[in-house]
Length: 235
Image 1 (cartoon, one colour):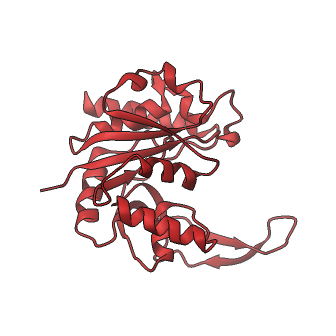
Image 2 (cartoon, one colour):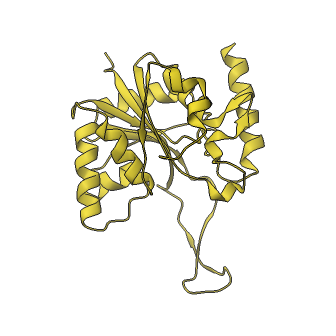
């Protein structure tokens, strides 16, 4: 039997690369904000009964959403960096043994089948699991200290994966790993990187490539297309 889990959604970022009039998680596609789509995907899974959403202290947008009145939602203030917001989300979870699924606010197209596979793999592992996709394109590394982007060499793509979210760990284990990594000035690019720094090897769970993160303006049309397809399949 799969244990219940709590989702944490960091949503305090400003999304400057979108060059929009508001943070990207509040842009609208397929009739709702990206944040609403992302959270509703999580709450569609019966095992996820509660979501902690981490927003900016001065966020004027979240209080206007129906999510603000959903009893399954807890809202907490975020910090300057993603890791600070994840810490804030973890602080709202009292049980160190609880399973926590951290998901990007700007990934609205995650599939329930992928969420279920992630839950099974994480709970069979000693140190959690993440959704990821194998690298398919040829990878190039640029030369260091070059003003123009110049190829240094081609990187072997075998065993390379694109890290996605959600990423799922025990609350206490994740909190301890983040604390340790930050205390030693480690570079933390996602939750799994903190556990890696502490010597753990989370499981890679192959997810769908259409679980994209909306980052650039051109991502909006693609995300809307994927969402429309997903909603048709669910209807």
